[in-house]
Length: 145
Image 1 (cartoon, rainbow, N blue to C red):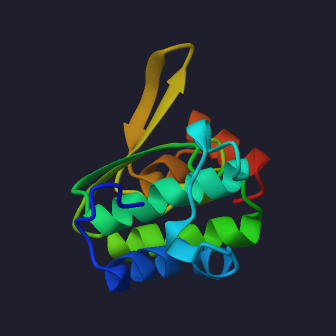
Image 2 (image 1 turned 180 degrees about the horizontal axis):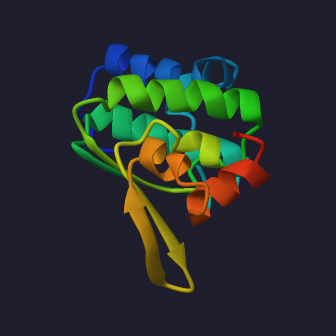
Image 3 (image 1 turned 180 degrees about the vertical axis):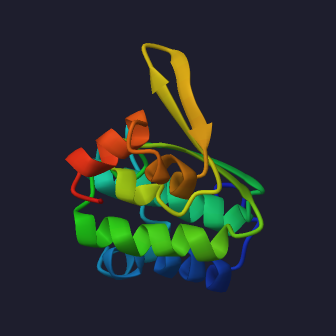
């Protein structure tokens, strides 16, 4: 989490709590001193994703790029993480690459791509008003409309 020792344990625990890793880390024999192996091989894919989120929370990053950031977690955990992202990164620019549409429904803008080409770019609300839009079709298939 903090290889250069820049943050207090209190700050690290807060980031772990917000990223829903606190109980996992508390259960580790070494706690905050747990060594993550090369490539995070001693963590699950979901835990690796949450560690990345915790590090972004710890650093209070102003630009956050999420590429399927919650793909390896269950839907309930995804909802909790999305709530954390909305609250803790409210003053940041968040760029999200997602296939789970529920993770981007409250975004300011959505860009729909098809074979590398921009098909639509607007707010989710505006795209959902157009029943001919690609986004509307995807939302309908996902059961969101």
